[in-house]
Structures are given as C-alpha cells and as structure tokens.
Length: 588
Image: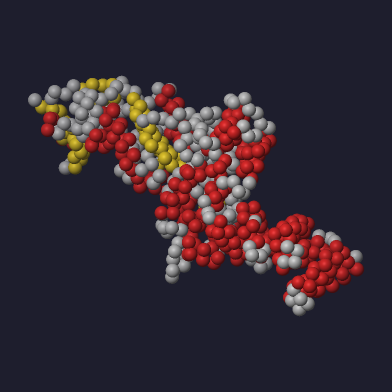
C-alpha cells in the first residue's frame, strides 16, 4: 500500500507503508525507516524496502538516505564537549560570541597571533578558542536552548564527515554510508515542520577547504560555531562572522595564576605574577602550564622567571611533566603544526625560513623593508634550495600572508614600519628548534637586513625608532652571534641613530655598554673594541663633556697607533677627532 499527498509544484509526497510518523518535542520525524522532512525540498520520495529510506532532491538529482534503526528522542547531544578548564576566566570574547550567535547563523572563532585585539573563534594556538566554544555550548545546553548539540573535532575533512555521520546514525537512525548527508539535510529549515533548535560546533578546523560541502545550512533555528587557527577569507563567506580571540589581559592573567596557585595553598606576590604573565605574553595555554610547573616542582615565581630568562633553557623545558586540564600538547607542539601547514601554502617552502628570520626581531613590529631586503632575500633563496631564481619581494609578501592566515603573525601592510608582529613565545619556539650554526647564521643575516634597511639620513623618525627596537631585540636574542668574528656594524649604527635622533645621553650610555661588551668578548685591542671606544668618546663629547671626549680620544689614538699603525684610516680619524674635541674643550 502506498500513500500519496501533493507537495508544492505538483509533485507528490509518496510514503511506503508501514511507516509510523512520530513527533518528538519540536521535531517532525518518521520512525523506523523515516526521516525528518524539511519543506524546502522539491522532491521527497520514500521507495520502501528496496532503498530503505526516503529520497531528497530536486528534479532528477535525488539523494537516498537509508534508515537502519529507530531515531533517538530529543534533546540529544553527539560528541563530547571538552571539560571546563580549571579556573576558567570569563572574558570579553565570550560576550561577543554570545551576541554574534544570538540570531542564529555561523560564527568562526579565530585568535590573534600575539597581538592584544578583539574579533572566526580563529588564530594562534593556545589562546583558549576551544574553551570559549565549549563554555558557550555547555551553557546553551544546560539552559535548555537546544534540541540537538553536535560537537565535532574537525581537524580534517574525514573527521568532520565522520562527526556528521555519527550524528545522522544516532539522531536519525541512518545507515552509516548515508548518515552524514542525511543529518545535514535535516538541518535545512522548512515551512511544513517545526525545526530543531540545533548547535553544531566544528572545533580546530585546520583548512577551510576541508569544509567544502560540509558547512551546516544557514537557519533561524540553528547555530554553527567554528574554532580555527586560520583567518582565510573563505571562512567568512555567506555571511559567516569572524571573532578573533586575543590574549588574556594582565588582570586576567594574574587572576588566573592566583586562583590556580591558591587551590594548592600557594601564594606569590602579585608583582611577580604580573611580570611572569608579561614574559609569557599573556598566553592562556602558557600560563596554565606555568602554574602546573610551579605546583609540581615547588619552584617559586622568581625562580621560574629566571629559568625562562636563561637562554640555554628551551621553552619545552619549562613545561610540566603532566599537562593540566586534559591538554594533549604544549604550546610549542601546537605551533609546530601551524608552521608546517603555513610552509605548505604557496609559495611553498618559504613561510618557515621567513618565520625563522622574524623570530630574531622585535615581536612588536618589524618593518617590511627588513624582511624584503637583499640580505633577507638571499637567505630565503638559499633556504628554499633555489639554484637560479631568487626569492622575490612579491613572494615574501605572499609568505607573510600565509603566516597570517595561520595566525602565526599579525600582518598589517598599511603600517610598513611595524608590518609584522609575532608573539614572543612563537619566536622562542622557532629559535629553540634551530641548530647552533643555523641560529647564528640567521642572526647575522637579520643584522645585515637591518643595516641594509637603515637610511643614511634619518628623515623618517618612526622608521629609525623601529630599526633601533629591532636591533635591541636581536641583541637580546642572539648577542654572541653578533660578535662572530667581529662586532657587527649594526651595533654601532644603533648607537649613532640614538644620537642623531637627539638622544645624545642615551647614545653615550648605549656606547658605554657596547664598549664593555666588546672588550669582554673580543679583547681590549680588537679593532671592534677600538671602534666602540671611538664612538663612545664622540657621543661623550656631544653629551656635554668635551674635555672627557678629548681625553678619551687621546687614549684611543695611542692604542690605534700601536694596534693598527699610524696610517690606518681609524688612526687618522682618531687624530682628527682628538684635535676637534681639544679645541671644543678649550673654548669652554
């Protein structure tokens, strides 16, 4: 026996019997071999025992969804929501997420790679995207706002499809091979039935292409939440909204650390905790693992900060043996995955060496002219194994966008003097992975790139400041490499730049420190040490001590004649400057 009834457009809805239609709460479903029928389909046809299910489609394009068992009652949850992290912090992003999803639709949650900012949950590993999504899903479920909640770890297309298939089998009783498509079809809104109130969470999407054909439909009754490290334009197609998850604030960081330690009867000075949070870049994952390390080892905050400051200590050595909150990897491991994927994007093989170069520079802003300078291009060409064609500026810009899309950097081309920003822990992780010889080679190349980008006449004060900041960062990351086999010229250029900017006292103090360092590393008679002493004497005079400058130049001249000879250019320059400052001293 077959029952027929007309559907819009003159097509008949045909049910094979026996079928018992049931309604579960808000849902119109067919039991046994039935399927929720949404009214926006033009053709619905149940073919009975031969096909074991209805057909949904338009015209001659039909989709067969077989049913193998009785559907479950609602509400129903598919997948496991990650447990709430200990001492979870309420954040501004949670309010933005709630507002974005209030009217249904799709929101992608991203994170900002090291820059404090608002804004799919997307971006850098370790900022807490999954925890924010889990808190939203858990809150909505407990409040009775949902009939169906599906949590899928969607790190590739297979996992996403498998998650949908599980939902189709559990909720619809669909056969495994057709369950994913059946479930997505049932999410379509329709006029003839009361639709489910649903939430689908796709956690940790690694590539937007993995979701081609797998995005849940837009629906006034449903919400889709995606967490990802990606910031590709494809994620915000069709009205999907992007929320970038930033780092903790200093207050959130201190509150978190205080609560975590207090639970184990530990207290630390707020000032120490604030300083540690800053040194960890306010990254939630790093803070949680630091708290666990302090608890497990009994080390105090000051001791942990000293461990972090030790250049011989790798970041991985500061993680606890047992990770907290069910975490499966350290921050370094999370970023390694992102770096590998960025390096596979076009231009292939360029993102990793470019990130290695950037890891030696200022995390708060690297001028684009440094990363596209001839020394940088030569390094990148060698790193990519090219023999004939050198890496071009355009390719570097594309590689920067690849790193940006994976939330490994923040890239703002319209701010050329601070075009690239990068979290300091990502930088450290990248440097930690370098063999010593490659580490020093890249550091020296970074110095060459800075010097090449430095204009002879500093008309652009913002650029000069950025170059000095990057030189300071480079010294902090790889000072020893800058004295092999001699002091790099960028060290002197940074001091002169301070003086040329009118900061003559700062220039004098900088050169004083450089002279001490050069003497310690290379010896008092090394030409680099004589150059540092020469520059120090000059800026001592410019800082208002002409007599002291004259006395210093007299000593530099004597040592230059002894080490370099009377006719060496440096000796002749020292003699000239001695006369100049003697005259200035006599003039008062």
